[in-house]
Image 1 (cartoon, rainbow, N blue to C red):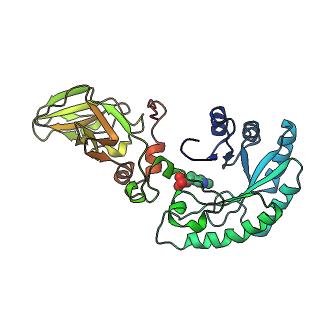
Image 2 (cartoon, rainbow, N blue to C red):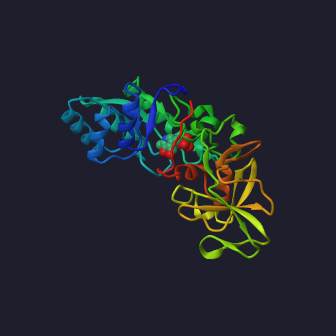
Image 3 (cartoon, helix red, strand yellow):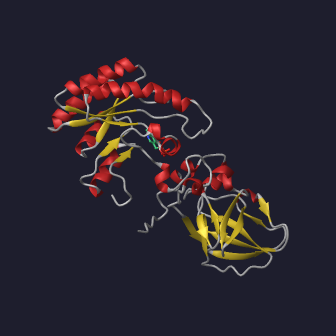
Amino acid sequence: MRGGATRLAVASASEAEELRLHFPDTPILVMGALTEEELRIALAARADVAVWREGFREVCSRVAAELGRMAQVHVKLDSGMGRLGERDPAKLIELARACHADQRLELAGVWTHFATADEVADTYLGEQLAAFAPVADAVREVAPDCTVHAANSAATLRDAATHFDMVRCGIAIYGLDPFQRDPAEHDLEPALELHSYVADVKRFEAGASAGYGRTWSAPEDTWVGVLPIGYGDGVRRGLSNNGELLVGGRRRPLVGTVSMDNITIELGPETDVEPGAPAVLIGAQGSERILAEEVASRLGTINYEVTCGISQRVAREVQE
Ligand SMILES: Cc1ncc(COP(=O)(O)O)c(C=O)c1O
């Protein structure tokens, strides 16, 4: 693919199905848990799937037989994340052997996931790595060609020892920083911007209020811009009287409560902003920029949640 990835990984079967329409030959791995129905969709889309229990290995084998195809499976060790994965290394190796021996399955990978790669001073990543490496070696003895993988974005940037055969970068490929700092520190360039526009500009006399609950009133005579974007689009309500966005190349405070479909910004006692002016909620305008990491920090969350929260009704525009 043009960005340089040679494989794709997703959480769900429906995502794999959609990607398959666009990438007929690219290997796709579904990392999440699957119901039998979802497994059918994933295998029909020729996606690899995760296996960490003997019961699910049997289901994979049966569904693959029904579909008249082989299923590529990646056995997953829970080396300390405490989510999906087999905890017991011996049981995982046993499961790998059972997959390898199964006529309907190809043991395509062995993998794990790190809990603290984004916490720079931690030592737990090293402990997880030490638990995973010997298991990966043992599984490779069973299937020498299987792909060993463990690293998310933070681990990829932090420690080359986590890279093995491939890395599973998520947030970093969007140019966002897994450490919640400025992406430029790791030469990452944000790929996503969130834009709107000023639909109206209104004069507010001192004391006039904007929005539900009248949480903001003009401290003096001023101008207020109204933007047709709100929490229904993913602009979180926690930004009420607690956010900034860019209009006319300057930061403008978000005033009043974020509504489902509208927000209001203060433009000051004198303004040259007119209806139709472009607004940037995440991204750059002139020499100013607002990072997803900044928005996340205001909300006490992480950039992942801010960008995942942009809703389906926001029209996507992809620039090559
Ligand atoms: C199993 C697994 N691998 C890789 C990733 C990618 O992580 P990141 O976006 O931090 O690179 C995720 C993200 O949720 C994940 O759950």
